[in-house]
Length: 402
Image 1 (tube, rainbow, N blue to C red):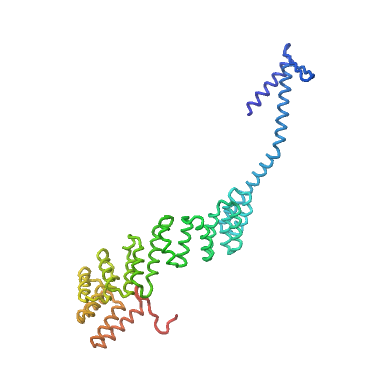
Image 2 (cartoon, rainbow, N blue to C red):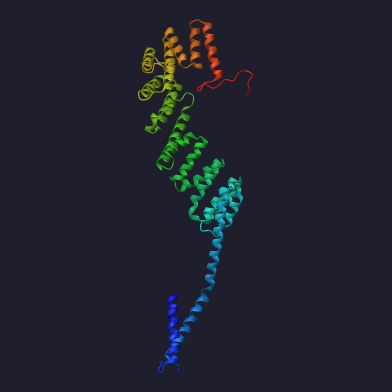
């Protein structure tokens, strides 16, 4: 651009110089509708240049209002961006009210008003003002009609955080109506159902959450375990319900210890001891679990001798396991093998004394008509319960505080 102006200026100066310095500097005659104009070539060049300058000036004057408006808009946008930047800085420093004010003042001239209003809504909720939060969310919806889901997701997230669970359900339902498999909406719904402990609802949602793949697998596994345990922790569950819940589990989770225990406990609670025994024997083939052995020892099986033989088989593999020893003692009591039962229970106590083992020993001593020994066993168990163990909660002694 500068080179072009320089070239024109050189030509202009040259034409003027030629007009005065050259004897024959050319001749131009223009005849138009009876008007005649005569001039030399250098003068024609000068006139053409002046005409060009005049046209340029008129064009600039014509464009001046638009350029002035653009300059004003740029200046306004710059001030808006500065306010927004200060607003985010204020929020990061914990100055929520100032940050909210700066973000919303700069929203009108911002290139991202939606982000401003959504952030302001979060700041308003953090200050405990839900009404102002909802106002900013409404302005966010009005700022861009094509981002309705983004606003609704933020609204649902904030409602869940504020404990507004029915409102959050309604908000997420709006997204579900238009996009039933929206991954983030499904994630928020899963978190909401888990928070509400709506186990049946979460059970139905879990397959969709696994397909969405936007929640860590470990979290989904934990939710699955919790829902299964909760739904089977009911009195006298029927076998159809137990099997239905078990069959819904992913195959990989059917080897989880917590789920196996919940399954077996549900079978026991439903008086299906034979099925529970079969499930315990199957589980213990691949993984050692003393708690399952303890449950097996309490089962009332038709084949009492077979029950004892199975426990003693496990005991041969782990001869110093106090839980298996106690289970063997209980099985011996059912088989009326009193001396053997006493030996097993006392061995369990010698390895790891527990209130439960002392209680079993006391009951056995009463059956053997040894009240003094029974009293001693019960007293030791009570003392141990009072001091507490990792598995037995401490019993408060008389006169202690609440």
